Length: 507
Image 1 (cartoon, rainbow, N blue to C red):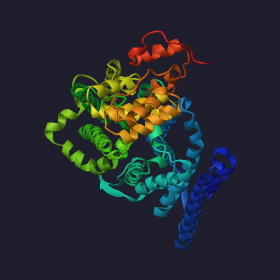
Image 2 (cartoon, one colour):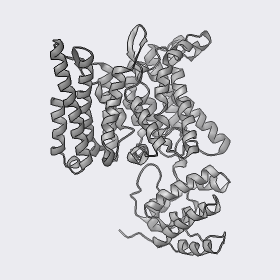
Image 3 (cartoon, rainbow, N blue to C red):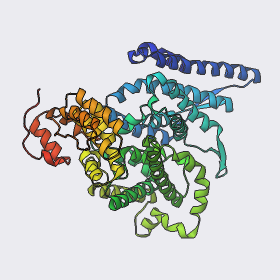
Image 4 (cartoon, rainbow, N blue to C red):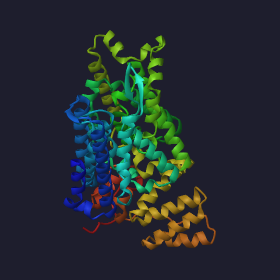
């Protein structure tokens, strides 16, 4: 009852909640679920004569993951202000999680073991999915689904009854699949989360540093090594063959990289053997790559790629450990190989190997903030070279810039649609937007399109548009000095701007 009361009281304390009727209703609905469950538990225990108790259970994986994920969320929020606004909502989720977990435990046994367990589950969920205010009740459904799966979906493993699924990944995968099938991705901030995770400077280094203690203590570095190596090698090969990046703005997108450290590395639902952990990581990266290609081909949002594979892999862990026993796979055990050349203890040696690999990938541009694929000129050049995929990326990026108020981007998007993709009707709408925003070439292209002309008017982006169109995946361009903007544009692939700007922006 205490968790329910605290959950309901939040709605009157914090204005960002009280202003949103559906969020208020969601909080009261979640509190009502806890109250109903508590009453049912009370009468059941009274009828059976059970004495319910509470025990404190502090597990190192829980508090260590809580500290790592919490510090990373604070760093993210320092550069993306809505993250701090979500912390109040996260508090409500935590209260519900503790109360719901208590009910599930007491219904199954007489003692409730309270600790830090709900924190890493809730942090992991909130690193990848928030529902918008009008749909917020589904956020509590995700939490309930994760704890219910942990409580009820079990198997025998290593002589003990254990939960099968990672309690944060399972509900994310289930809800992601439902959102894809129903076409309701816009009910969430999933795309915005995937994009803004890249905003903080040196975010790859931050993820590496905060997760390194867990990599050492729990021996999960082997999984991360397998996943990162597979994804990077694939991206490098794809770039070598096509001249394009498989993942648009990075060899390994930060959201995928985060998943390789926080989302699939739960020791309780992953393989026990070192060889199995390597295979687990390789399979996670392989499934993510395959899903990214499938989602892109079907027109579905590709940010789900990292969320869908983990329950499948959780179901495979016993088979993976069985495969790991095969003699020819012994070479997949980094700790044994490192031990043979004098590096020990095994977990520290494996984490050290991962640190060396991370430094190496950073030094060659595999994991950094400045991948050229995040900027429009890279994809424009690939589109001009005849890549339809690149043209689709150009249309998408120019659409984002157009929505942010750049008439130049609207006009360029119309030209790409009409001349590269044969979509004249869609191009007409873009030229109209460009004209409405005062970009003269857009007005002229409306007339040319109406007369059947295939020759479209173009002009350089005005200085006022530069903060929008030269923006990459790292967030907003705050610079307003024309000379500095031209220098920044030049460094980001805009060759025509490697000179003196024609004028100055208004302050």
